[in-house]
Length: 246
Image (tube, rainbow, N blue to C red; front, side, top):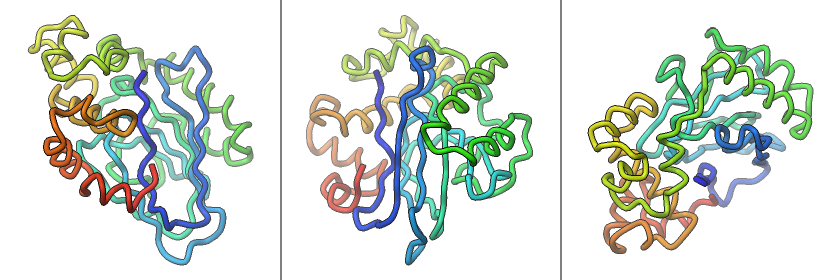
């Protein structure tokens, strides 16, 4: 199954904790993980997160101010986010294609404004703030289950087939084949359910997969890999490995 890496954190960053918890089995085809990212003490300078594209949607809760929450937008290249010197976020990372609200209510930065949408984000955040991460898990599970019942999220057989067969996909034609769709049907379906064209989704999946296995299994040669990696992340593979933990 698709296993995107966490966003890149500079190796020199002190006093910060990042934790992932698996969802229960009945939600494992919808949710990649529940996660928490927080400072353990105030940092000496602003922290910048190098967010990598992964085609996932995240619901975020700001635990320093429970009125602040939101849903992240999708990108095809990196985004640098300034989180300040002290922060505490909790989130749910949904697999590609699961979110059924499209771009409605999404933000293209880490959430910094009070949430005024229809989803119960603020109410959920107020419950989460009183709990440690282990105790947050059942609250997040109830939250996801309610989103499923309201059809805010839904299982997506097309993206599920693609993610389950990611090792066998080297082209958009391969992607259409594993999804049992024509290229034109794939184009329309992916655009509607993920916001990505098949080509853009393939670029993102290739990048993510290159962190988990030999890059030559996803790219034709080293030159192709280096060019694609730098275009998406802003760094060559060597520069990225030297600067960041993932």
